[in-house]
Image (cartoon, rainbow, N blue to C red; front, side, top):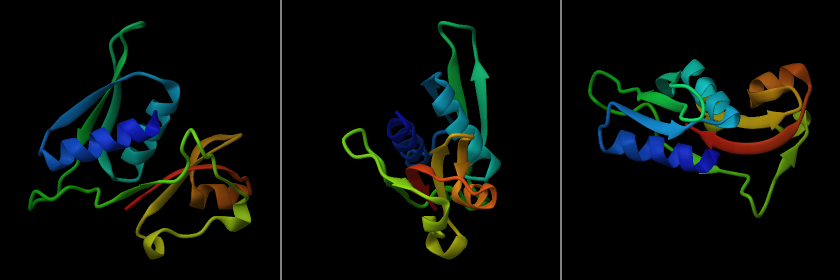
Length: 127
């Protein structure tokens, strides 16, 4: 599910779209909020009521019109899930990227997971 959202955001950015919409799920909304908090997208908002709730993500561009997302690498897939302890979490692109994982305390970045000393399933890297 998360991979579909990331691909849609990247494709919308390449097509110079202003925003993109997805069906709502708690995991997807947590991931888009995390991306908004870290500056990879402008904003993420819940719209509508159940059962037709959606997530609307506004794409972020710099003044020259270049997108904020340069690359995305999917780590865990449905066929192969990868887990890591907090000591095994490394920096992405020498600190310019972000590694996202799901833990027992929710969706968080690798930096937050190291601070809270929790490991979990690696979802993706973004830079």
